[in-house]
Image 1 (cartoon, helix red, strand yellow):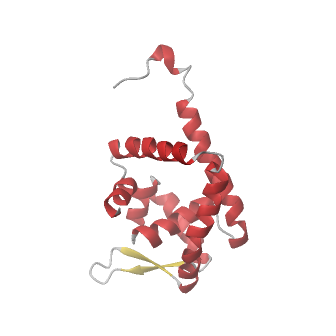
Image 2 (cartoon, one colour; image 1 turned 60 degrees about the horizontal axis):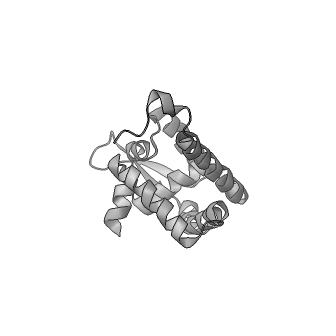
Image 3 (cartoon, one colour; image 1 turned 60 degrees about the vertical axis):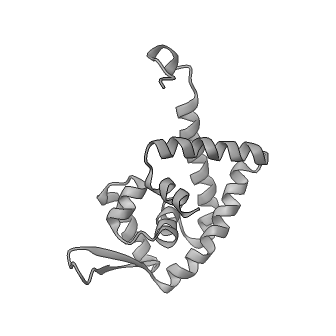
Length: 157
């Protein structure tokens, strides 16, 4: 269903609001992650490895819509922080596997607590039914776009 036309596009705030909400989420996450010397982007990588069993850079690139160069730099930083290690696959030496280090595993146990505090700060002003509606609508948009993380979360429920 087409909701927008060239004539009404400039009057819609939707795209800007979604983008600004994402920026706000990252700013709030950055603030909560500062004591752990972690950024929101690094948090997302660790969450996807820890909670969604991604174990290759390609998995992460697909999940986060990042190019391989950006992902390599991100993984370099996480490796320098001793949060993850890259190993070669036993079955295919060309393939790199990602594993959390002991420090990475310990931090990954804290990620849901940090994420919950950040999300409560971001949407704490919403009523329960408003939050449920927002989640339902965003889920509908992402399922229609075949977003792999959203589809995996729905399948796991």
